[in-house]
Length: 480
Image (tube, helix red, strand yellow):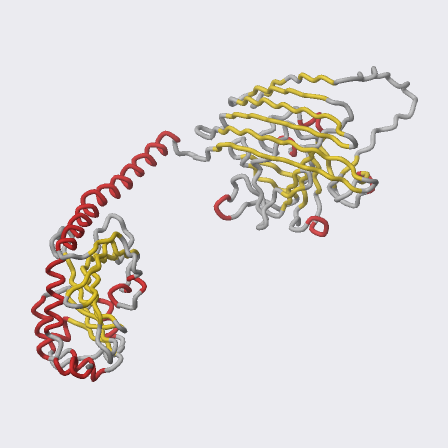
């Protein structure tokens, strides 16, 4: 059972309430009229063709004000429930809004019911509503339309809840209301208002803390509501409204918050430590070694991929992988041509616990005029599957070579001339992980390197020179 104890301190600039006089028993009593605005215009509640209920300020001051469930609990046809006693309200009006949707299902949202704050929609375009800015502690009234109000408000098949924060009265006033209750409820609400011309200006601030009904479901929230509103002419109203809020709401369910925090901390340490160790003992040593090797060869080293090599149509750069990167590049003149050396790696899967990285050192130089596109890369599982379903590749006369490499070319005659018996034997002798590609005006020779390999740039450049020496003369002569 929740116990709420509170008191209110109020002061008015002028005037006092007249003492109430009990009317005679046989006299007629004129009841005060109730005016609603949930129909987009002021109207008497008796003349409005909708099922409407209104909760006044005196009723709102007696509830904790954290969620709307206490204020709406007595309205017929409305079910307002809170899982933890805070702003995680599940609101139902005549069967609508019974469940949320998506990542915030049943957690501070309600579909099919439009919630307004001084006429401004708190309901999002997808129909969900978060109640974080709803402050009943300083609200003037709450109006509930228990009918299909889509014709007036749109997306309100279940009804409309309109929270009014504009103070009534024509005298300056301020109000301070502390409330203390069960389950660690502490709420401090302050509101001040003053007339300005034909309107009213006000400011309200509420700070609430609550331990919740279950373990580790505590919450705290601060809401600022300010504005000014007044009439212009005979039928127009101008208002400026400001609402700001901050809060923290734990929805840990049956799990202990301490264990969740420890698990998140350990996970963060493990993931962060893994990235740091990989960077410290794998990326930095390779970067320093690459810089030293390329500078010794009179090349200019750079970090990353400043030349956009990954966008080039080389097959190696587009093998199936979840992540890929060029870590280091270097440019320089070699053999009378401009050469680019690149460190490239990719991972077929994104599993951090699996070290399935494939690392390659690539040397890119100019091709010759008249050469067609040609790809000679090591045989992989994807190409074997392609063979199994009948996708054709170019086969050479050496079966050992066909088992170790796959060849693709736009011109089969050019491929047969380029990859002659001498070139095939040279590729087989280089071992697995070596290949080359001709694409447009560029030719690339690559070799796979071991994870711990550091001193391989000079060997890769020598491999490129050896490849150029093994290009058949008939291909070279045909392009000149």
